[in-house]
Length: 150
Image 1: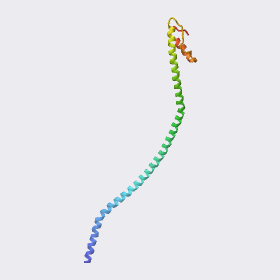
Image 2: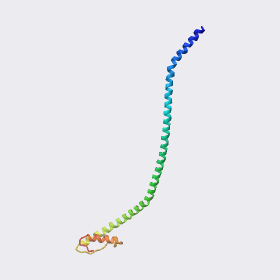
Image 3: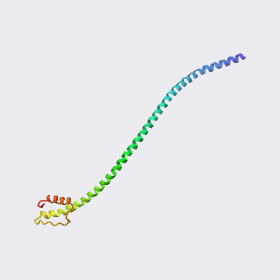
Image 4: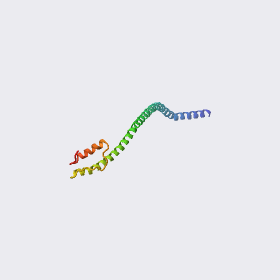
């Protein structure tokens, strides 16, 4: 009986080994695949590390370029401020001169109408022009009117 149980147990062990052999082979293939994947994963990790390093370097260069550009824009704005103020002042002066010129033209029109008429007696209703430019303008306006003497 002991011999039969031993043989029976040997048969069970043999059957289990036969059943386990394909499983062991399949497991061995998967482990080999994992080892290859591990090598690829390590290479991928190295590539990822290198890409991260390059991205950080590019970020530093980009930040430096942005700061440099910001400084240049600030310098340009600082230079443009006085120019803007000068232009604003010149525009105010031009408006004042345009108003004076308009007044002179209004004053010169009646004078030109009187000069064109039969009795050319100039009767200025406004004060005489104060600056040389105003006198030159009045002279040019009167020159352009027929019948006026300069």
